Image (cartoon, rainbow over all chains, first blue to last red):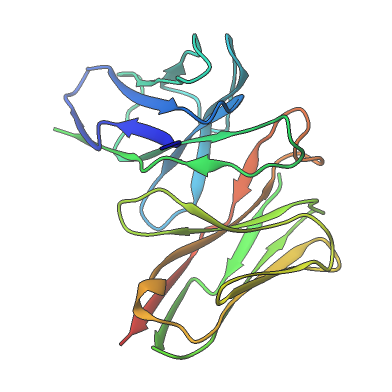
Length: 114
Length: 116
């Protein structure tokens, strides 16, 4: 089955700890994205990558880091510098090569602070 | 910066009723997307619109790309309990979606609750 897999579904972070959220896609999509969703709010873009070994900051990149070493993988690290990390994190991907293709989403990771 | 205003914020309706929601932008879009998100899940694409005036259906859902290119509408006919969720509109964060940035801007969502 083709799709976007995010893991884990739930994650707990201690103060001062870095945690990494996984996002894997087998859709052969070029572009991948990370969003943050807070209760009652829309999605805000953290980072995005249009091609392997390249990524750009979104609107709320502070306290986060990413890598794109493989086309199918775009992990997000929430660093200790992110003072309010509790949120629902969504990964998306898109095929750039066929016109205005929409983004498709994984099922999210809920991150909480212990 | 670009903003998307989505209304209403929430709707509480009876099963069988029709639903309308809309989204307006401060700038012109060349693409409108409508997503539905259920609790604890990621958004799922419902309808994609690419042309001003376009009217597209997906089962009981119908969406329209406004002729001014600054708005879009989503209608749900004969609602059922499984229509419950948050509906988001989204549009490109750059003048030409599919171009350099591929960024999307999302509305704040419309929460739909359907009473059986």
